[in-house]
Structures are given as C-alpha cells and as structure tokens.
Image (tube, rainbow, N blue to C red; front, side, top):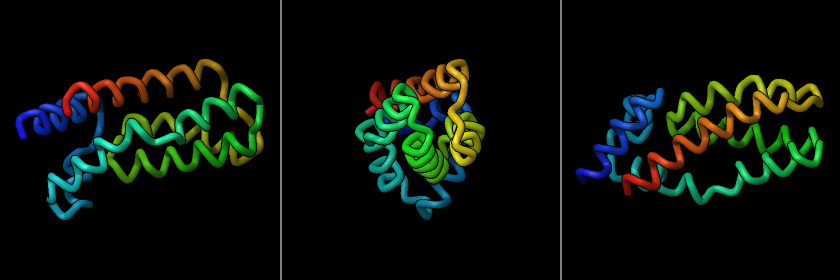
Length: 119
C-alpha cells in the first residue's frame, strides 16, 4: 500500500483532486487504485492524437470528450482542465492549436508517469 499512497500524493502534487476521487469511490482506496492503474491502458488519448494529426475534428471531439470525462471521473483535474478548451473547440468543429495539444500531452504524460512509476 505504500506505493499507492506515494502515487496519490504525487498526483495531488500534480494538481489532481484525489480527495474528491476517493469520495466518489466511497473512500474505497483499493477500488480507486484499481481504476487509476487502468488509466495508462486506455486507448482514448491515442485516438485523440490520431484524429488531431489527421485533422479530423469530429473524431477529435469524440475522443477528447471521452478523455475529459475519464479524467474528470478519476479526479485528474490538471488534465481535465487542459481538456476543457479542446473539447469546446471540437464541439464547434475546430481543432485546438498545436501548442494546446502539446500542453495536453505534457500533462497526460506527467500523470501516466506518476501512475506507472508508483504501482
């Protein structure tokens, strides 16, 4: 359980709302950890990047909206906050800027690193 506590602490330090997440999981830390540990295997981020690279705003919106929802449900607030403007652009049929995508990817990678290094 030590590594799980380290993971939660590091996620908090990265701007994530782990207290709120634990509340959503009825303070069941093991269940919360189970879902957090599955996050790196989720294919949504890859689908979002692919749609962005192909200039497909519709597919980008679908993937970005899903990623925003997953990150919100898991309390990954720092990623959720970066996703919000991208989802709004996608909803209008637009794509975010390359700089915005770089910021999203940077935040995503930070969270993935914390989760994978502390399992």
